[in-house]
Length: 548
Image (cartoon, rainbow, N blue to C red; front, side, top):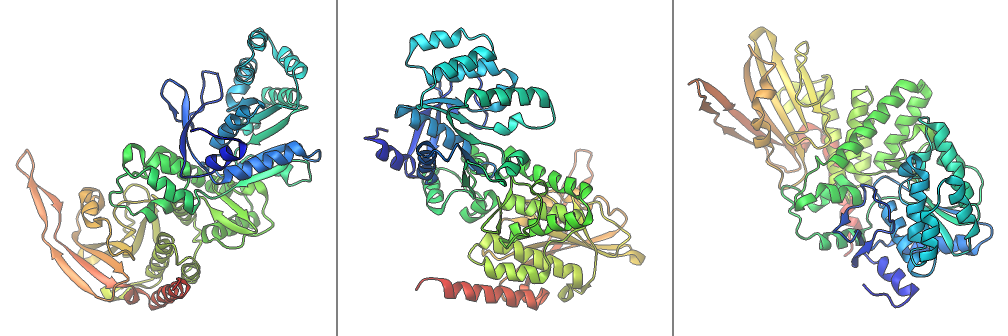
């Protein structure tokens, strides 16, 4: 792609309709994993981001102002901050700046002299004489002297993953490298990016200083998301809708790229699972370390972020998982649907139910324009209702306890009625399973439950019975029946029966593939009329808000 001038390049690199391969601006052999380097030319792929023009304006602000020192690019995990810094490096280099680009301070910490040499060889790639000098640098003092002696206003530092130089492990060595870098760049303007959970950064920026803070929250904008789909038109959606994919990933560039590898959608990708585990581990750590007052505020903060509500203003920075939650204008935000579901279920397992039925109804009213989010709160309201009052139309009465399980449930046979909810954020078959026991008669009824507002839905019944042996393995000795319960927004109550299937094993015995079972479709209002009325009111509100 050719650019006529600064403004033309700025416009094209800010347009999501443009997609380009750019050379990775670092000559070292270690490239951060987050960059998917293409071919032997060492290039990375970049889709224009609307925020890039704002980043350039922020850069211009620090270079033109004596009152501003450094520029910090801050945002949630996976937004694409590192890509923006790499593109900024390419852009500034093309227009005459000498950029010292450090893409990963973790590597810089391990071998600082070699890492700075690799960076400086790119900075002065057009000067064989300087390159010879750089290659001859032997220690940190010589590197520092070289930068000091060659400094000019055209020298810019771009430093990514600065948080790698914080932390208690190897603290002395990290502090030494960080102070050395500070001396190296003492007279140069610097663009930094750091992990969202860098507590030192949060403490520093909460105080008055001369730095420019450039925030990048959320995922792709609507325009960017539409362009992304155009660029990835070969992706096979399978059983998912675009809306579901956007909700689960939060339109987060890292998660979108990860869950659509090989043009097939899978939410079991490493990056999503890593985010889920990290958010859950943080919650457990807060539960184990905070006092009662602090724990209450942590829960309130998470609740506000999940619901897009006003956050409490007196929570300590170290009590917020800034990788996945943030606030803007006092309103909370959660990075993606996967984390939203994972943290809610983790807190439930820890004994905290974030949303009451009334909370969920209110959230549906506010967020009705997003079907996936509405589905999440509708499911929460229905499951809370079942815990409280059961499913009267099936003669299953509450209250009953709820248990959160991983993999498949181990049933607590001390309770005649109990609801079991999967901890997995995207469990493939059901939203919950209800177990009803008649101990005296040694009878048990399993009621897998699926709550849905979609007209079409993934084949939950087949997915559930595919693992039938795991669902029934702790119920030996009981006469077992199964009712697959669909709770829908339709008005009709229906019931169908499916005959069981057995197959012969090699030893001649018979194995149940699935048992005889009934499928029951009941309207939402038959479970909880209050929830149904709230959902209908939210839909009516959405209709009023739609343009004529």
